[in-house]
Length: 123
Image (cartoon, rainbow, N blue to C red; front, top):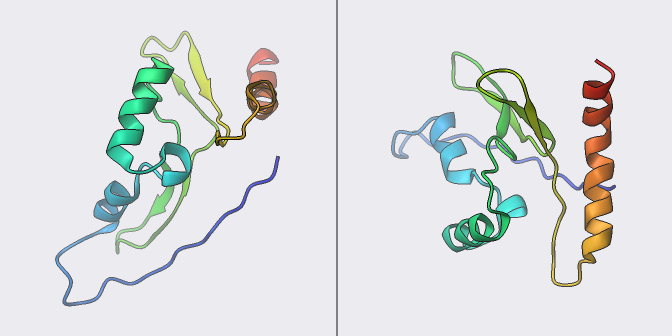
């Protein structure tokens, strides 16, 4: 599995409308890399096809300090514990494109989930 990443940095100009890291995150999430574009149509299509909530999948994760500075990434592999703390749903995804082979994509997802599954099964 190979991942490409692009670091994005910036400083808000003094004459821009009031904004903070939370405003920026809200505008950037979900990433086109995990949702597609245009966002609203892509999200609606994903909801119809997948039939389950993605929960925290691909959400922003990182740190933000008291000055509003921070560093965030995307949680491409994650888990969400149920409200009663008796189960966990783990998430991983693949880059589905026009030429994707469903069997290979499924195998890739299983490989990505293996470290989390191993940790949970051996606990």
